[in-house]
Amino acid sequence: MGLPDNSGSAGKNQPGIHIGDTAEDILARWGFDTNNVSILPDRHPQYRECDRHGRFPISMVDEQDVIRYLPPVCPVCAAEKTSQRLMEIAAIPKRYMACGFDNYTIESPHQQQVLDVCRAYADHFDEEDRQGSSLILCGNPGTGKNHLASAIAHTVLSKGHSVLQVTAYDIIARIRQTWRRENGKGTELEVIRGFADVDLLIIDEVGKTFGSDGERVHLFEVIDHRYRDMKPTIILSNEGVDGVERFLGIAAFDRLCQNGELLILDWQSHRRGRASTSN
Image (cartoon, rainbow, N blue to C red; front, side, top):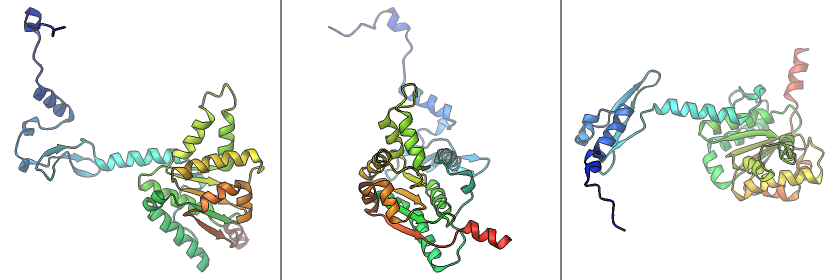
């Protein structure tokens, strides 16, 4: 079969399509100066002005002296929007939104040591992420586990990583919701995959559930998916080390220990300390 013959009147009436014209149309819609498309590299980079952050480039010249056009969007504004979206899905509890490393109360050398470990983990999260390194924070209520976890989350979010902070019960309940036919929120595997895909998962209140075999299976599935994908996980618990292992199960606990670190927060409750001081 031959190619269609466009030499007739219909073909003569069709306007020609010029690739150069199409590129100029795109550049014009983006706000570029189309007169500079074919000029010498010494006329680049070109810039735009952001009302909030000042001048930013919309073109550049690469190492081969080829002109490259950049998205005409302020990179700082774009980063802020990305950070805001990440914050919205991080689910950091409202009480801990203002928690950072600088406002963590230090009253002993041991507290300083724990703070230093958590700060280093957050500051070097790119490396922790590559190694799949996890943290386990054990201690009595009020010793600052959530404060430190939220401080880590804020730092990791600022680096552009995704974070999700949930309780062990949240994970178990969300998985079990998929058992209802009318739930319409995905399969059990999809829910587990959702918890597994986030860059940093913080699981709070490990030990507050019944500790049944079924609950251990659910938590193991999430932790195991993250272990195999080398994704870091932070565990927060009021239990001791033996209690955390009992509630998570030996297999899940063992996976967290590989390239992981265990921190024991064994000082007095900050909440009770403040209460007794005010009386």
